[in-house]
Image 1 (spheres, rainbow, N blue to C red):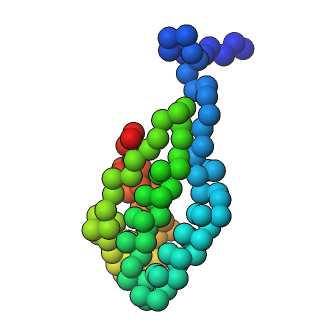
Image 2 (cartoon, rainbow, N blue to C red):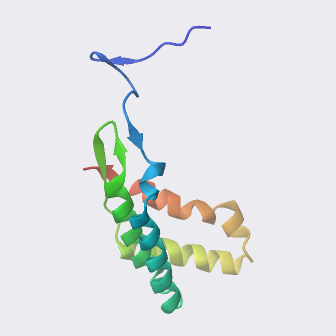
Length: 117
């Protein structure tokens, strides 16, 4: 069975360097994650929307896909609504909402707030 490669100009589609998961690596991201967890814990997790936005801003600056960078455009107010809806519906449905839909709400929100820099 032959596989065809889509050609865009002189270069095959999808070649090059991708740094997506490695954007989470490094000592700077380690300390950032721990610092943000500390802030969230000290505020009884009320600062989660703000710490989440800070993390994804730092993460998106380190992502590199074929030489292009990403920009994270989300804000804490937007995530607060997603976080509050997930928390409320999960509480009301005794975590049923969390297992069926809610656990991916953050990923959907992050994906919808990424653009090319």
